Length: 184
Image (cartoon, rainbow, N blue to C red; front, side, top):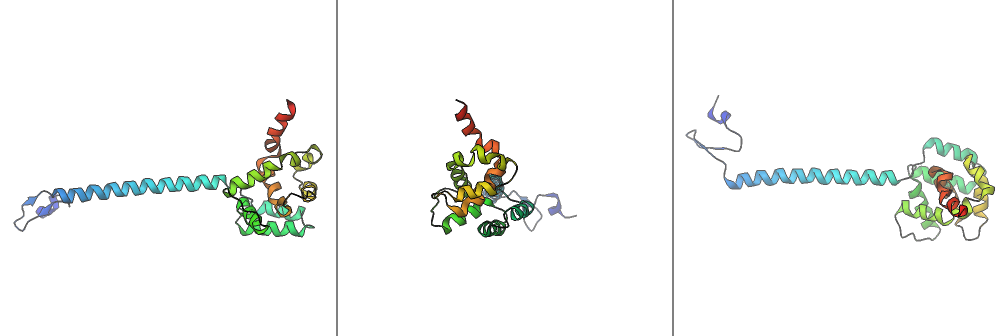
């Protein structure tokens, strides 16, 4: 065993086996590297938290749900095209809705998740009408979709993502603010 084995790697060895403590510059470099590594780890953890938060805000439509909607909407070619786009967007409903909005000439100024939510809320009074609500509660969007598409100011191609969004939020939960206003 050499003398070098008894000392930490930061020590400097001279040819006559005498040790000299690491210089303040070497210690400074070690401290800086350690701090940089810690900061890098903290930034990485923060970025991971932000990514998870973004993913939590995403409304995900599963392949099983897409299959159910395809069977419900088989006679609606436009809805089928929208469902294909949602699938192409890996089930990200907001991303698909944003693509559709841009396609029909809208220029959303909000992040995807906020924009779809805002559009759905804008049409809440129509979506939550009692005549159609029971159908939505049963998971059927066909009648409400036809109703929305009959409205001249509603962007027709967005009926499918808006109604899927409402179902994913829960119809009663989505309609609750309107229900509270009606009770007063």
